[in-house]
Length: 154
Image 1: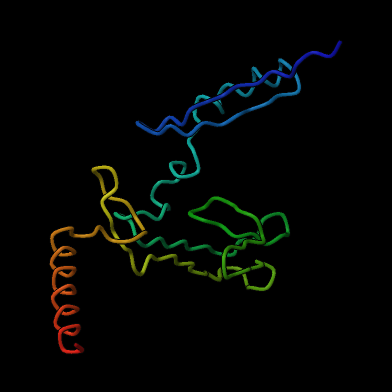
Image 2: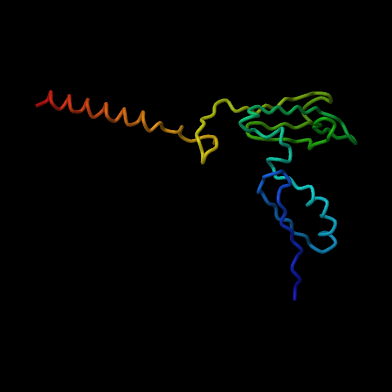
């Protein structure tokens, strides 16, 4: 009979976040060695919160510089090596195509937002909240106009 693989469900450690992750391990030794990773888990939004687009942070800029390490070129971000090939929506960049020291700047920016009230708070996107009083006035005006037009046609 096969043994079940050790698993762990972990909640994001950011206060108030309910995001969870599922970790599965091949054996008990891997499960034990993964404890530190589980204890420091943050979801993709909170892992690097300053690089997350949100209403109070509508612009994110990432600057990467080409560095050489062990004969290969990589992108570096504040001294941390990344891959030599990066991509995202609308761009692809290979460090091999640039000289060492070249810097690229990738910018993501929210240019327009439509706000609406959402369950007592503010939410993004969707139709703006309708002013019911104003809507009633428009409907009353339409009814008066229709009555006037209909009287003129008789």
